Structure formats: C-alpha cells, structure tokens
Image (tube, rainbow, N blue to C red; front, side, top):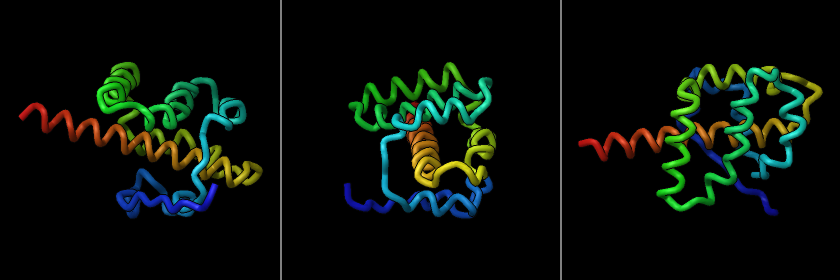
Length: 132
C-alpha cells in the first residue's frame, strides 16, 4: 500500500487533540482491526467500549450512507459519552504516551479515533440540517 496523507485540520489547536499526536495523522493508513488484541490488552477493561467503537471505523467507512448514519446513531444511544472528544482522547493517553507501544499502532489508533469523531460530527451536522 502506498503512502497516503491523512489530514484532519480541525484537530490543530483543539485541546481534545494534543499537538504531540498530530504526527500520527500523517502516516500510512492501516486497518485498525489488526490491532484489536493489543489494544484490549493495553487499555483498562472499563474503557473497552471505546476500543470496540474505534475498531468499527473501517467497517463504518465502507457502509452506505443510511447504514452509516444508523450505526452512528446506535453508537450515540449506547455511549453518549463518546461525544466528549477530549475525554475519549484522554482514555487513549496511556497507549499514545507509552514509549513501548509501536508507532504504527499509535498512528492507526489515533487516525481511527479521529475518524470516528469526524463521523459523529458529520452525523450531528446532518441531523441538525434535517431538523430545520
């Protein structure tokens, strides 16, 4: 797979997305699912719900629009706290700041987390437009 630039400009200067992690948004894109086992091992069990939702990012990106928005709505119904992007970022700090964790895993995790955040933001924007 060739190098693919990934940019999420909205993260720059946003306290929910620490500047130290910006470098992980410009790496090769990888499938997050291959890191499922290490992610579950690296994060406390009370935060496994977040890992589960982040692991679904690849699947979400391949859905048709209706299915995609239904899935995002379902995620928000089961875990409304996922909309607190700063809090969910902090849940990942022990992995992101762990020097023994491979940069490829960190990059893939951070991209999938930010991608899920974008999906939630898009869902909220579309739902606001539909209620007007």
